[in-house]
Image: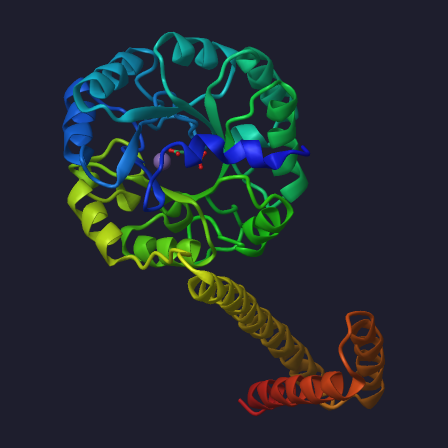
Length: 360
Ligand code: PEP
Ligand code: MN
C-alpha cells in the first residue's frame, strides 16, 4: 500500500464535524426492532446503522443471526431514515447477498480476520465493487495478520478501507472482555496515518459502564470514529446484552465526550501533545500491570523459599539480573544509572513481598 491518502477519501466525503459514529444492535432481531432503533438514531451523530445478520458465536447454541431476511430490514431502515447501513460478512455468499441488498459498509469480524483463506475469498468476491470495507482486528494481538487482511483487500482493488479496533482475547480474565492493547492500534496508526481507524468500545468492554471511558481514550488517541452497539432494550437483546446501550445513552455520550479538533496551529500542537500523553498513559498503565505481575511471581518464590527454609537474598542471582538488565537497557538507550535505580527499587519491593510471605 503506497498511496494511502486515497484510503480515507470515503470518510472525508462524509464531511462530518464530529467522529464517524456507527451505531445499532449487535444483531438484527426483528423488522420492528431494526426500524425502531434506526428511527431513534436518525438525526443524531450516527451516520451508519449497524446490525449483525450472521453472528459468529464462539460456542454453538447461542443466537446465530436471522440470516438474509434481515438484509431487507436494513434496506427498509435505510429507505425510511436515510442512514447508511453496515453488516458483517464472513464468506463470499454473505458478500453476494449484502451486495444484492445494497448494504453500504461491510465489516469483517475478528474471527474472520484471522484466516487469510477467508479474507482472500471475501476480497475476490468484492473485486470490482466500490464498497466501503472495515476490517476488525483479529482476535489475537497480531498486527501483521491485521495488516495482511487490509493488503489482500487493497490488492483486490478495494480502496475504501478502514479498520476497527475491538480488543484482543486473553486467557486471563481482565476488566475488559477483550483487552484493548492500545499500543497495537497506535502502531498501526503510525504506519498508516491515513487509514481510517474506528474503535468498537462495546466488544472491548463487554459491559456498559466503561464504554464512554474507552471512547474517550480512543478519541484522545486520534481515532476517526466509533462503532457502538445500541439497542432500545439492551437487557433483552438476543446477543451481547450486557454491552449494549440505548440510543438516548449514545446521544448523551456523544455530547459528553471531548472531541479535539485541530483548527489552528495552536490546536494542532495541543492535539499532538494530547495524543502523545495518552500514549504515555497507556504505557504507564502497562508498566504497573507488569510490575504487579512481577511481584506475584516474587510471592510464589517467597512461598518456595519458606517451604525450603532458604534465605531471601540470593546475591549471585541478583547480580546476574542486574548485569543483564544493564545490557538490555543500553540497547534501548537507557542509562546504567537509571537501570540501577529502577531495579534496586524493584528488587527492594520483591524482598518486601517475600519477607511478608516468609513471616506470615
Ligand atoms: C459484532 O460486531 O457484533 C461482532 C461479532 O464483533 P467481533 O467480530 O468484534 O467479535
Ligand atoms: Mn456483538
